[in-house]
Length: 468
Image (cartoon, rainbow, N blue to C red; front, top):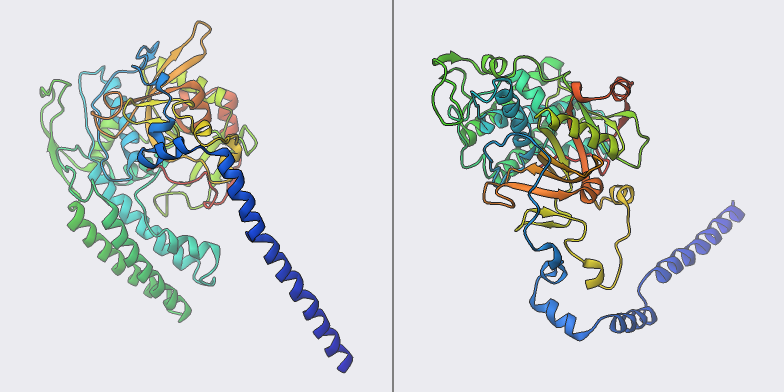
């Protein structure tokens, strides 16, 4: 016994210096600091430091060769429609989805009728359904410890206002759609952050209570009953902030000039959805993704990336950008707009509404390089899908290759190019991620790939964040 004790003490003493040594060698010591300071002084110059102290980085790095008017010619362009404004909310996914749905309606009616959908109405149910998804997820994982990655997923992200086209399809099919005139935007719908904070706090409190109920062996019916009471509180909060969703309304369709072209009739939201969309949205499209970290022509599904507990997870086919571009061009040749998403903050000139890889020369400004490729940027959380916009035009060269693209944005008509953003094809390839394509524009080989059994991936992946 004494020999074993001595051996353990010796092992402990042997380990301590190694840990201490690693910590010491990994820190910034005096010698390293001197070297850093000297090298930095040799690299930087006083004039540039003075300029940077008094000016924004973007102003100093801006490439003024790109400051002139953007070329607005596009060889393929879909019909224009009103530009909307999501204001201080993360609902770009809904705006882009509605842009596609209302454009499809106008196209089916040869532009003799227009419709504008209420974002406030569907956002109400989006938030209610996400609250239920969180609470039921907590119940499903109640046997796991609080530091379990899945439990933390629900408590860290109890609710948000971001999303994808898949969520818009599920919500519209379940709750219908209404015209914006019937349920207009409220102050909170356009400024969602405070409501989101309050809902998140309440849901975390409710989540702890539900975990206690499961731990106390409460019956499934008792837990469901309490969850219903909790959702009643969420519903009441949403009703105060967004207005209670309309159940029935009278509406007459108008043309682009505002002239009434149909007799007024009474609709429920689901009847209006069927009247304006003609049938289910789910099953009519594929979601394409460009993720160079993963194998192409494979189908992937993101666990828990959905808006409703009983809805569809986000499922996508991973494709090279060439295939994504070809489907986009085929769609727009037929006057069909597309939901698409991007890392829009990279190299964006907000004033001109222009996206190019050389809008800002940060590398020269800081005497360094930024060499990561798309796969490396995704893997290190440096880039990912952050904003949904509606792809509406493309310019092709003499050989049919894309030169530039145009998207309909949701930042208002006074932003960018009168509400639009123009992007070079190089920027498109580097920072475009998602594209929703009607199946009639999808080649058979890609449709077959979309029918594969999906590979499940985790929602914590750096690429699978909600568009907002």
